[in-house]
Amino acid sequence: TLTYDTLRFEYEDFPETKEPVWILGRKYSVFTEKEEILLDVTSRLWFTYRKNFPAIGGTGPTSDTGWGCMLRCGQMIFAQALVCRHLGRDWRWIKGKRQMDNYYNVLNAFIDKKDSYYSIHQIAQMGVGEGKSIGQWYGPNTVAQVLKKLATFDTWSSLAVHIAMDNTVVMEEIRRLCQSNVPCAGAAACPALEPDVLYNGCPEDVGLRERLTLWKPLVLLIPLRLGLTEINEAYIETLKHCFMMPQSLGVIGGKPNSAHYFIGYVGEELIYLDPHTTQPAVEPGDSGCLPDESFHCQHPPCRMSIAELDPSIAVGFFCNTEADFNDWCQQIKKLSLVRGALPMFELVERQPSHFSNPDVLNLTPDSSDADRLERFFDSEDEDFEILSL
Image (cartoon, rainbow, N blue to C red; front, side, top):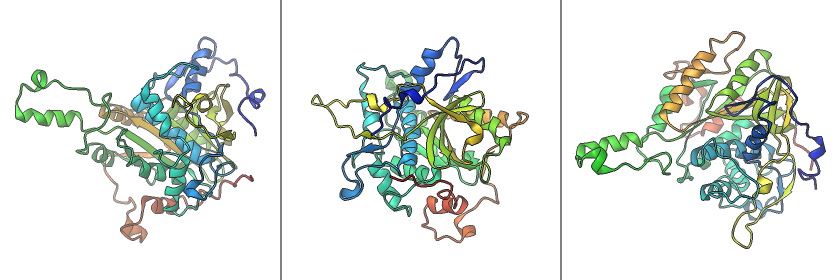
């Protein structure tokens, strides 16, 4: 079985270029910050094919080699959201260093076992309800829908997950979703407030406490089709700008035959983490601590020409606070004014009258969002071939 160590010779170092390197909203110089670039990349959670994990559904596959690459990419983009939520964008993984408990809590949410929130087991089995049999290849839209459903069980993270339909982001819908009455879990997002200092014991000030804890951290996933069989070059500048935003979670997609998790770009090349390496499933050690080195890519990341990108992708953003979301909206509006950058999606305040609804699509009221997405992206799985085992 190939491991990332045996593949080390295939990975090129970053080119010596004056072009900035952008990694998930951070700008770097190859000449002065190469170590910082590699540390940032290594700190992302890297999920690859695994073998010898407990059978999915009790009697199903014990490896996802050949079919699980988009599921692993979905795990990676969602893991980045959880890292931002619980550890912060500035957090870094140091090999051999004992990490904080929240790091292990995030990692455990993706371990290959049936009771982890976002395990390959949960994604594959939740996909059955979306019409995908276990072992069937997912497109970026399907994996986004499945992750949205799984996130409802993750009360620790208490995320609001929104999947923008019809290439349209409706601000009103997102605010309604994030400003729910469910107080968010996690001390980082909801700082402790001293009643005697801030409230002076007044009952009416309870409303202030509720308002301060109203915004649920947002994971925004936008499934897009940026061309028919290849990416329309008019979208390339806009795609690059998405990696410049501090709210960036990256992009899941790939090229025909394989899915990748794109985390940035340099020049005309995308930087990505590749799940197509089969590693043994990981079990906690004798101390109960999870060996974590195989969940971090410790070689220079892969690169590919942006022009080779398959046009079916999903772009992700994380807004921890309402201020983050408002800032993101302003950046998107400014981006629409950049010359030579064709908007990839529309940002509107309210749902447009032409926006699709179940009645227009002739669907029953209880049809899932995934059913609706399949109508718009019904060719998503035809664009990728299943890799032979």
